[in-house]
Image 1 (cartoon, rainbow, N blue to C red):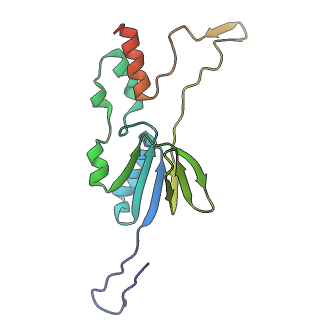
Image 2: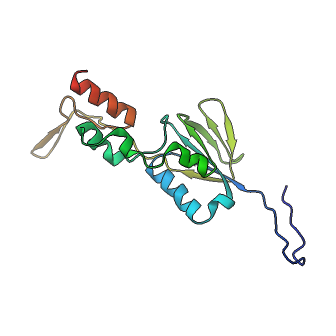
Image 3: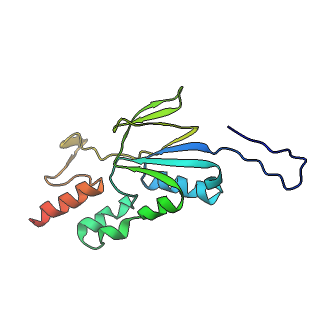
Length: 168
């Protein structure tokens, strides 16, 4: 319930319920959007819930190549530590994927069976690597995806690929 004080009383403050902001995607784009919202005073305006299908906080996906090459530690690519979410009063649903959006009811359903209502919704789900054809020709140039090559997302797949490649 929204409660508005009498504006004619000196020093009176309006007590307004926060809007519910749901962010689908805990990657670089979703986290950056939330950082900007917080920088602009959004903590006072929104109760924020973030969903990410990976079981940890956000990280710099561009640096996955450095992790695979061994030139950077996995811990060094995380952008916001888990306590950042807590310090900013953000509910992080790490490892939980949104399976449905009901725009009319303004709810999202998660793959763990939970349902969250929202007033504002941001969809920042990123992309996935896809190699649908092993070889293709364009004019006189033949391009093939070499055995053992491919995209490296998410972090868990990158680490598993690095371990397999090292023979451990």
